[in-house]
Image 1 (tube, rainbow, N blue to C red):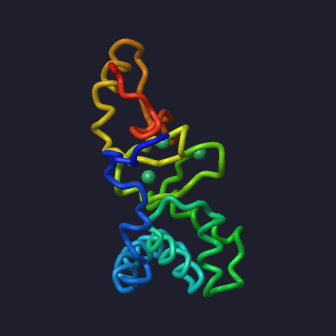
Image 2 (tube, rainbow, N blue to C red):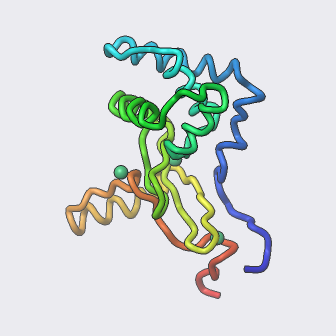
Length: 170
Ligand SMILES: [Zn+2]
Ligand SMILES: [Zn+2]
Ligand SMILES: [Zn+2]
């Protein structure tokens, strides 16, 4: 496993991409339309739910309900994990978030409005986000030859990243 991790990744950690603590106002602005949608659909907007949503947005997605709960509890220790689960479920029904299975562990939640797929390295666990059209050829081939509609969003595709794998043809 020598060599540097030179992944041609769009993003490995969206946590680094959007810093909650450096841009709290941005997170608040992002949360507002989502809370508006929730209200319009008859959902309740509470301080606790606002905190869960803002924390989720601040973490940039790809978090388990457990990790999200722990982060929310830093400021709101009385927020229970079941509350976070229920709220994530509701946001999922509204099409705001989606969950994806990256491996054996619990599902992670991410924004639904940013279509992408996940490649997970079996060697080091690196997660690579790739844009949806990457699977376009495979999708049409599977549909034409097998009548199968590929929907790779729910589970990650596993394999070996550039650092862990052997380049094909070498
Ligand atoms: Zn699932
Ligand atoms: Zn994702
Ligand atoms: Zn790897």
